[in-house]
Length: 235
Length: 235
DNA sequence: AATTAGTTAAATGTCGACAATTATGGCACT
DNA sequence: AGTGCCATAATTGTCGACATTTAACTAATT
Image (cartoon, rainbow over all chains, first blue to last red; front, top):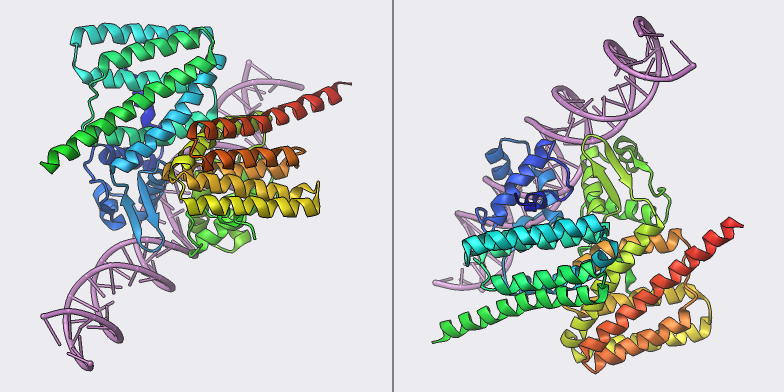
């Protein structure tokens, strides 16, 4: 059972109001590319589609804007953010800084129980990975789970809000729309393992450094892919 | 002339709609403590006070929520965030991570013109500080200006949005309501100077380290003050 | 007297309509 | 034919009213 479901809900609170449910629906649609990146969002159209009033839709759009999934201009309207390489790399820079710090804080603030739980999760993932071997889908989920646990472990509400409430939706959007099933599965696994060890040793400085390298490695991997692609196009 | 005025406007776009203006007004009221931290926000009351409809007010509240200045619960209402020591320290942790990274990026991405402009600003502040000497008000503005310039210099839209659009309102709120006129004026000045030098040398690694120490020093200064206060209360 | 159930009042969520602004299309003009 | 201007249409911003949920208050029971 994966814990990433909770990522869909920034407030960590069940969707009770209709605006919440519509927000969830549109969120998924955007993340999965059913509503194209960079496309304009028509309020009357979406309102009719979801059979709700424009007021309620605007409420949902406001929450999407908080996740940086859409951008609004006064008297002009909303657009879905577009997936550019530059945008993706920018996010990785922010993640390196924030998750690195979250990891440092986690080494200080996580309880022994939390750490034990995280270690158990890694073991479970290791087994499922051994079974699937090379299939990266579960690895991806496992990756999100791991990062999610570390972030929560920081016990810093600001870090949690920014990373889980805002950035991770964007990260998922990019992953899905760029078809990024990382070939770093086994390597990433070792890195996760080292990070947990550092947290277990309460070595915040090392934990931060390892997490930053872990994320920087992903970023460089993307940059490499991009370079290959552009080289492919040139010939 | 200070540049921090632009911080009041997260979108870096003039307030054209009435919801924008009301947002600005309430923002100032909250930051300056005219609307008490932790207090409940009544939609009908504020709507009547600003002579607008509830819809427009809710639009403004949504933007305040994006700045993390108010928190909303479904079917319950909005509250102004409360100023706790823990909250302030959490923000400094995030700032250390993000502004450190912004500084690293700035060392790589700032143009020579931008760097020259920033150096000129520091010189100007140095003179005004020599005149006022010890008066910390202008120093505070100078401090915000400096950090603002570095953040913009990162040329990373995600960093800029999070730091200038969200966190800085909270930082100002805490500064004003806790009456934090730092006694680190001259020291902070030297640190700013070193950071600019590192950026000028295009030494991203050093620039990040210096910025992180600079912010960490502020945080420790606060922690010290808190410790003194609690000791004062005990006897 | 304290607690719980029921009722009333107030606040939030949702709706449809109007006003203001922007985008679109056609027309005249160079 | 291309460019600039004007009128129309569509979209967004704002408003007031209704529906629904939560909070407060009263009253009855243990």
